[in-house]
Length: 118
Image (cartoon, rainbow, N blue to C red; front, side):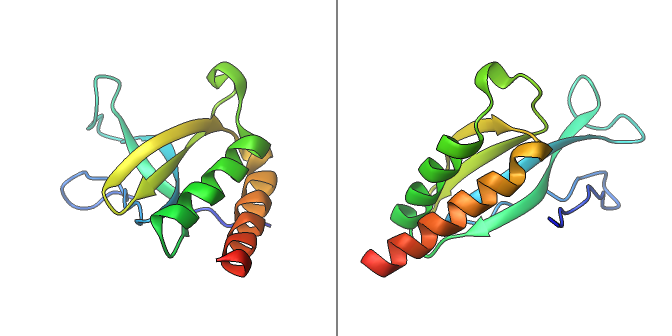
């Protein structure tokens, strides 16, 4: 079972959006009950973080996750999987809930491989 962080809002209407750097950040979109956010009342939130020890490790994990769990043309998208380095967001790909076990397994296997060869 994969435990995802549910969207929450603080007293100012901000969602729980806290990507860790470096690493992979699973970003979801939620609707604020009062319509606070973009033109559609939507805000990004953090569903999960997979932390890396370095930018190179994060990149290795991201490529493996993307190869296993990217959705073509954002069709059926539930989340974006962001690649974050120490400098910030670098790239992302679309994925959905059904692909999460494959995404996580691929990212963690790549992390183990990177550390073993590093």
